[in-house]
Length: 134
Image 1: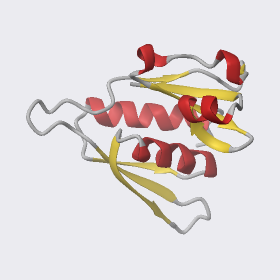
Image 2: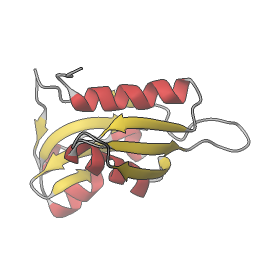
Image 3: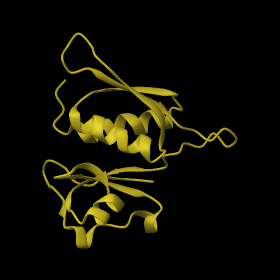
């Protein structure tokens, strides 16, 4: 199956796995998805991840989801796609969005790679706002 928006598919798979309380979710890999996964790991939204090679050249990303041991709540409460193939959302460094008053993150695709809104502000670079996570 060929998806027209691989990042929306990635976020939906994560969302569905969290709703179903899965420990691990497997997603078809791509360079942008690998970068988004690294950002999620660095910011503590997921426990771990592993890039696997499969028989096709694409490969998979195995993501271990993070839950609170006591309340069983997921570390990710909301994943929201911002920019889509039909309507790209580009923002300059001066008008980057504040997600949940700074508690959440916006993931951007910039000329310096896939980074969070705070890193982009510090580097003074704008880019395409891929998604909000909180």
